[in-house]
Image (tube, rainbow over all chains, first blue to last red):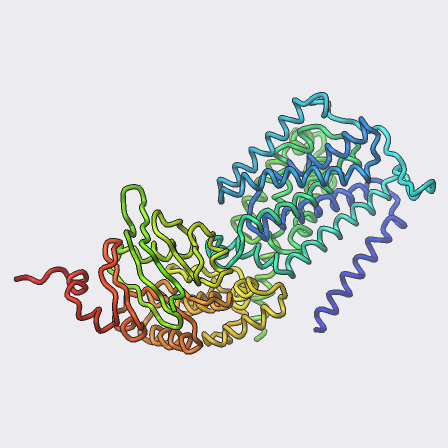
Length: 349
Length: 239
């Protein structure tokens, strides 16, 4: 009992802290990092519901991310629809897409489902490239200006600084966490996990497999689409590779694999590792650090080599990280933490 | 009254007849034993009855309702549930969560489901394992967990596929007591079993399958004294 009160208090404190961050932090770069982190958590958490809880390892979540992002951006660009309306159009589009994909792909199990999910995302990407009148093809869609959010004539907020994006991102995190919590503590969560653990056994216990897989997919896709729309508006630009590429799908999945699939805090942990890591690699932070502590001379051959190549190596390091996690922590970081806690408990007895 | 009627059920896999023209009735409250040598088509028959395979021919009528073509989940909701010869625990869920999944077929409330699950765990005498991971249980308890989970779906008929397979004599005895307990509660059961002594003790009637066909049906005494059954199991006697 005491433990759960402590836990709630900690979470409330953390939330309060996150809410007041923009009052004290003015550096756009720091806010940008936080926004990236929020987006990553939201993406991972969305995938987690279908992949982690229901065990349907989709490697095609870029389809939902991209459809959400594109719908919002297309409507804003060509019809002048404000994004907070466009977002819901994106959600509607994603529900249709998800139900079509689900009715086809969920006839397949295991690796066959994975392959089908990749194929569907690739179809989406190629469609975006080739349906030029709608999507502006490979050039993508650039939104130069985002209209201010008004209710009636009063301006609630404009989108000049990063602060409103920070709060939207935080809202997305809370939304996806909330939905995951609700799923885990309801009939849905039990049915999803039963399907994950043994589909045939679940079927014999009265669970309508096709129905519940599709419910999982729709929840997951809608949340992913929200994250996609948010990405589109925040970056102000979408093109096929950045929102519909295979690496988007893989990135979404990695957050959960590294953090721990089928746990509420897994995607949070995964994001806390992956986002700073990829940022550090991309921005040459590691080379600078090595130079600073004197391990490498900036003008030496090694220094120049690192500076030139390390920023391209983040995919390689990602790969190594994934291999290590799968080898040594098959249940992700969260699983590892749980195992340690269990061991401590056992030793205490 | 017959709660379950199997009428001329056949199942073909390509040219192979795994079941051909099998018919029998299961009456309410009884324990029906289903025996036969390996490969006789016992599990295939279970799969046909519970919706995993559509029968190629014939009908399965449960509570007066034709079941052909219904999916396993619908079959379960109508009150017929099976266990698996090769146990299928939901390994990463706790024992009570496993049973709750079954109970959730009948209720939307987790609280009610938990109470129902605890009740069934008591029936199989596994309360002390409530919070253990199902994947870590020894085989005897996995078998009992299968039964508890199936019972939690509140069935009218329970189909047990070799619940004693792979168990030691003490564990088998426990399962026999469990099956008799369940009978006491008025639940109809159909039991596939290889352990002859056990099946003779618990069954009210026995159906014998060989090579997919029904060889005979009768009380345990009738079945063991039937020369066809003896030759099916032991081969023809030498002259």
